[in-house]
Image 1 (cartoon, chains in turn red, orange):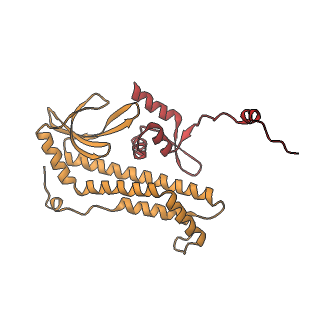
Image 2 (cartoon, each protein chain N blue to C red):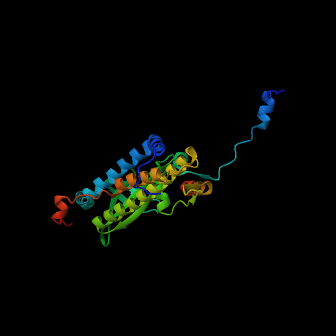
Image 3 (cartoon, chains in turn blue, red):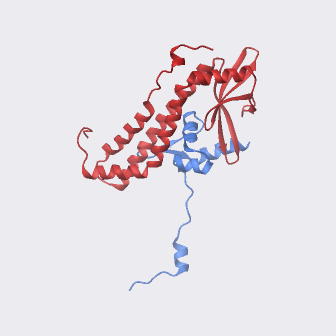
Length: 74
Length: 186
C-alpha cells in the first residue's frame, strides 16, 4: 500500500538549491541588471571570461560575475 | 545533412516552434543590427557633429573609470557615446561605453584617437564582431533547445536556418550616402 509523505517528510527530502557555478548570457545580464548585448560586449573585450557548455553555448562563471562586481565596487 | 533538401514536416514544426520561443531575441537582434547600419550609413554626419561639438567644447563632463576626463559629444547607441577633449596634440575623441550595473555605472574607453572618423569606424567594426559573437551564441541556444525538445531527431537544418537569418541581419552593408561619395573630410 502506498503512503503519502507528510509535510515534514517532504521538507526533509527537498535538497537545498545548489549554488550555480555558471550562468547563461541572459541569466548573467539579469543578475547584473544590464542588457545582454552589454554582456557580449564585455566578453568580446575580454572583461568577462566565459566557458562553453557541452553543445557550445556560452556560460559565464559565477566567479567572473563576482570579480566584475568587485572591481565595480572598489 | 543536405540543406537543399526540403525540410520534413517535423522540422517545419520545430522551426515554427523555435521561432516563437526565440522571437524576442530575433527581434532585438534585427533592431540592434539596424541601429548599427544607421550608424554606418550616417558615419560622416556623426563625425561632423562630433567634430563641431569638440571645437565648441560643448557637452557635459564624463569621468571614465581610468580617471580620465572627457566631454560628451554624440550618443551613438544605448550605452555608447562619442566623447572628446582638448589635448596638447589637438582634439582627441573616444568611444565611451557605460555599463549601468546595479551598484553604479562603469564607464570605459573602448577606443580613442585624433581622427574622429577612424575612431567611429573602429567602433562599428567592433560592434559587428559582437553581433557575430551574439549570433553564434543564439544559434547554439537554438540547437540546445531543439536537442532537448526533439531528442534523437536531426534538427541541424533548423538551427542552420536561424544562423542564416541572423547572418543576413548582420551583413546588410550600408549604402554609400552622398556625403561619403563626395569624400567630405574633416
